[in-house]
Image 1 (cartoon, rainbow, N blue to C red):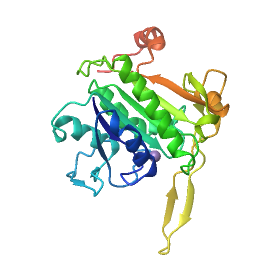
Image 2: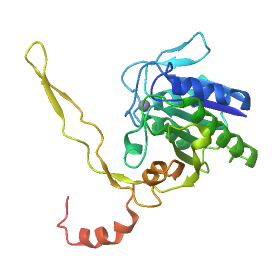
Image 3: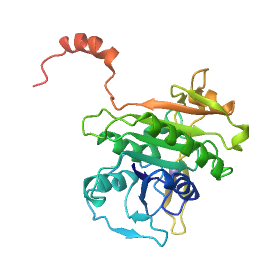
Image 4: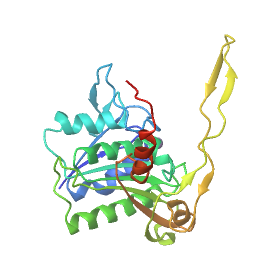
Length: 258
Ligand code: MN
């Protein structure tokens, strides 16, 4: 069993160290992770500057790039073999609902999935790493059982799956059972914050994520608020299939575009 581990908080993040420590005896486990915090980098790839890989004293490899860069170069030559599973995290904070669009943690896992490798993104619901070793044990227990049941063959044919898992910051004994959920929704992000720098220029800080809009029963927000570990299978298909007929009809009324 060959497992590639990455994250978006950077190779020194406690969540990555805890995840590696929890998984390391389940197989051949290698870490390729960003040098710096790359949260909210989604699936971004670095195309206009070179990437360098270094090895830390603990054996982790780190890259001056994004989470998706790390998994991408790992799968396309760096490792020299095809891992059976990509595991990303454990993220410092929730990746639920619309967060999954922006998340570098999900982006790293999704990069594996796009290459046909089954992948899991793990996040802790609250920032700050409280009970991170408990979360890492949850991750280990899930990965171990998925391996025992047999992973889909890692092939470049999208037969793989992509799982998004959020773990409340609680001792293991206080965690409620796993719930399989759909993603909830957030409102649009908060207002941008503008400040003046010492040279008089206006600078902007992206505001925080929006409050929850849909945390109905059956969503990740709902499950984790009750103390459950949430699991959402994700796919990558941005087509709004149900709107295809309506847009096809509407397009008939357009004057020729060319
Ligand atoms: Mn992060």
